[in-house]
Image 1: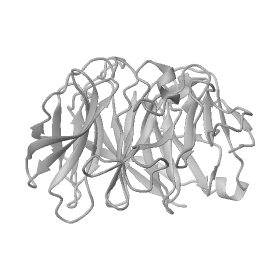
Image 2 (image 1 turned 135 degrees about the vertical axis):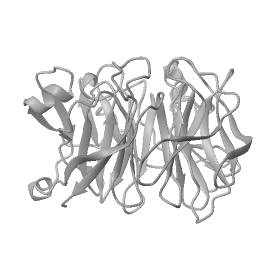
Image 3 (image 1 turned 180 degrees about the horizontal axis):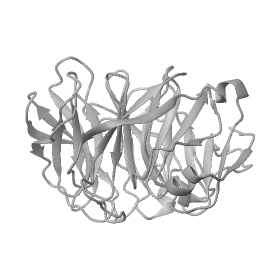
Image 4 (image 1 turned 30 degrees about the vertical axis):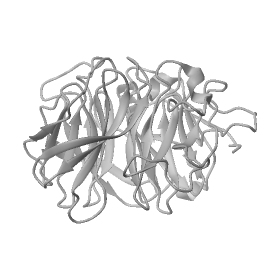
Length: 365
């Protein structure tokens, strides 16, 4: 994919507060019609969903509109009422060994009115792994490892899960601090994997018997589908560019040979990139009405990116006030966005009631 670069430089009070004092930011995206950019939805903070969490990471909704949230450093899964309120512990995941960026990370709920299990991604003593955990509607039960051997490290553990069609599960992994693993097709590190609910390589994968869907990633922590089923991913850069990528089966996204866009046709360029990385460090993403919302940690801002097929408009840094580090964002069943702050993950500046989840209203299109 070759993206035509359009560079924007914005300097305003909102960007100053959201980006930790930077005087400007530079974002690059393939151009789309200006009329589309003028219709960007308005996003406002509508209230607090819950407070008092400890390093919240993964977020997944249940059929009744309530949600499960993982706490990275406590190995705890909590349930939050659909209308907000106190988060109640529904179980702990065994075998979690929190360290650095590792711990209890992503969570996903299979479709249906009465799911009998959920999925979780965690860092253990020897590896990162995906488990299927029995769910009776109120408590977590027996857990079964379905994918093991994902390299672990203090940094770059990936961890996002996304349920796909035909009982498949997408698994985002990091390079675990060894960049060359991302180009090694026999390693599970630095990839987006596609497996069945039993942990086997999904039928139709680029290479039969391999769980690898895409490769050449540094540290993917966000996955989301658009309205026609295209898969998008957010990725942490090292020093040159953070990325929003459109994932295509079997393609190579360049790390560590390239960071951000290049002229090398062997590798897929990002659709959007942020430079320098201090204004983004993107973690979770959500897509609502073909507008992507990218939660940024170091940048401490929620980015709004209008999608137009395989292209994207210039990213907008939303002015939502000083919220600190943003770990995740998800579309609730009622069409609102739930935004997860992450100021107690070892790098933020915790304040009273951190960490918390906010409800965002999205109006207009």
